[in-house]
Length: 280
Image (cartoon, rainbow, N blue to C red):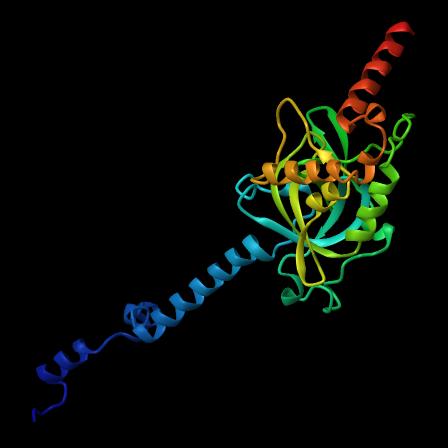
C-alpha cells in the first residue's frame, strides 16, 4: 500500500472512475437488446397490428354501397338486417359484421335501428374550387338489388303499376323484413346499389331469395343486352322460371297475350314518355 494516498496509484484509480455527469447522459443500449424487453415488444406490436387489420377487414361496419372497396366485390359477403323493402327486387340492409358473435342485437351499443328517423339520410356538403355541392348520403343502410331477377314494376313517376307488382313486394316484405341475411355482392350498379345474391334462413334452411321469387312467379329472369349479373346461378334461375311457367304460378297464370315482362314494360314506358316530350 502506497503512502501517501495521493500517490500515482490513487491518481490512476480516480481516472478510471466514470464521471457522474457523463453517466447521466449515456445510453445503455444493452437494455434495448435484452430478450426480456425485445420479445414482449414484438409480440404486443404484432398483436395490435393484426387486431387492427382484422377489425378493418371483418368487423368494421360498411354504411353504404359506395363505401364498399373494389377488392370486396365477388370475394366477400355482407351480413346484416333488412330495415326496409323499396320494391319487388330491392331493399335496404343495415350491415352488422360479425353478427351476434360481435355483439349485434344484444349489446346496448350494437343494436339495429328500427325507427325511420334513426335511419334518415344525411347531407354532406363538398367544396370544390368556387363551387359548393350538396350530396345526399344514406349513411346507415346499404341499398341491395337482387341479382339475376326482375320483379314487376310498382307505380313510379306517374306510371301505372304492372300486374303482380304489389304481390311481389308484399311477399318480399313478409319474407325478409327485419330478418338477418347474407348478401354475396358482385358489383355496384348505376343507381349505387349493390347487386347481390341474397340468402336468408327459413326453418333452419338457407334460401336464395331471388330463386324463391322465380319459383312463385313473382319475378322473371333479368334480361339485358349487357351487364346482367347472376353469379354462377343463371342456369338454375332459368330452370326455376320455366318451372313456374309450366305450373302457371303468379304472373304466369294469365293469358300469354296479356303478359308483359318488366323489361318490356320499362322500354314501352320510356318510349311513350319520350314521344310525349317530343310533341310538347
